[in-house]
Amino acid sequence: MPLRALLGPLLREVGTVVAPGAGDPLAAKVIENAGHRAVYLGGNAMALGLAKGQPFLTLTETVAIVSRVVRAVDVPVFVDIGAGFGSASHLDLAVRDIEAAGAGGLHLDDQPYPKSPAYHRGKGEVVAQAEMARRVTTAVAARNDPDFAIVARTDTWRVTGDQAETIARCNALADAGADGIMVLDLAPATLIDWRDELPDVPMVWIGGVAPPVPTVDALNRAGFAMACYPFSGVACMLDVLQQLWSTLKEDGHIEIAAETLNRAKSVMLEVSDMARLWALEDTSLNEEDDAAT
Image 1 (spheres, rainbow, N blue to C red):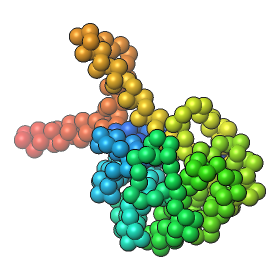
Image 2 (cartoon, rainbow, N blue to C red):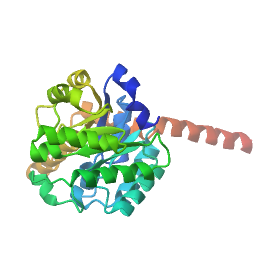
Image 3 (cartoon, helix red, strand yellow):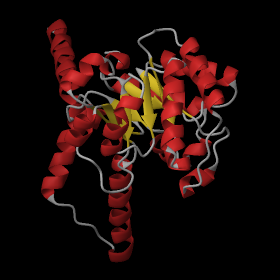
Image 4 (cartoon, rainbow, N blue to C red):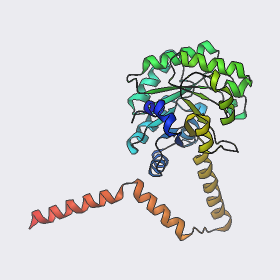
């Protein structure tokens, strides 16, 4: 299903599409099996899977991850391409490569390129509004299928705290052709307050990095078309793994409840499609036996 269709007017009638964050095919498959309608590939999650920071994730690495995730799931995959990997020509190639890899859409932000590691210390910057509008225009022109969604993310609200400037930028990016707008740190109550001044395009929420995390119901009532959770899964995984292997180092043994192991084995068999493969193998062996008799 094209991601843009999920961000259209029908979505506003049926509710917010939840897109939990993944960084690899296994996490994406778990998300799909949980019943979610989309998977979000955040830059930080993808980079951490390669043991480095998001500012250093390359286009080649991103495309490789997208390709593997798309092969693993049937739901739309929404991809973070950061600031677009360079100049207009670099951005053009990035959009074409991400679309060709099978993603349903992407979001592009207004941070300077190359991205600075200082972003993760809260020291963000944004490029001029006209520059970001050009990025959006370039991205829209580069896509092959009009159903491939181009969402413009702006960090203006976080960086400047200026409501008027943020709203003006949202409208400029919609005018440049963005299919949706993502405003970093935009809370449900704030969206409700701003709604009449914002463009008539789907709004995409991104958060969950710090508490409190709004409920899906609150996001839906505010009018968000999609909700992306970039760090929640990574945070839980890192915390559990750190505790697990630290315990083994300190105590010399680990204890995992049988219920936990059984649940994990069940998920493992499901995400690897093992039941179908076993059946295929059994059928093949039976046919070989029949042919031999």
